[in-house]
Image (cartoon, rainbow over all chains, first blue to last red):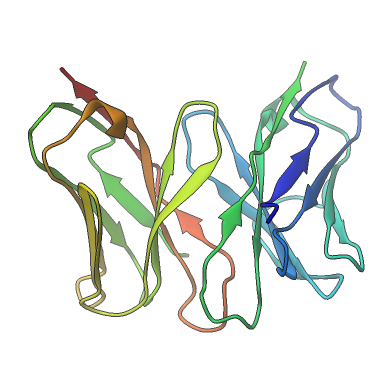
Length: 114
Length: 113
């Protein structure tokens, strides 16, 4: 049973560029949440997707956008990158109606903006 | 706005000793999560506490939840070096299914020989 997978593992971008990160949820899960974890901090919620729509959003600017596909996989897009966007981006998957409330995290994508 | 505070932020303890990490949160919630994170790695789920008075134990770690006090504790018994990691608590919403988690700042645990 494959767990949550994310790609790429590491990424280096320049200020002003755009980036796309990808996440495949755990088998049987239909909900994907994205978190940003700056160095030395706890993860911060970016947004959550269910049924291909953004359902909840944290305090992140519109430069952060996402998408969920019919197979439940998801993308996180960040436009006009800033140095402060350098962080570990974590994807978490869950099942909306399973009732276990568990969220399983992927290995993360380390984004460095120079 | 929900705030989640952990203390201590850093804990250095000797092998064999006991210690407790505290997690306080600012609004009502019945859902408290504990995660472990090793350097450069993702989050590993340790416990999910879903009701007042819930207690869960796994090996040398035991977590409890007091929703009235808005407090969760993670107790470490007879620490071993392998427990060295950063521990995060996170609070979920009071209603609905798995959803937005608000994390504390983490407690970096270092177990020395």
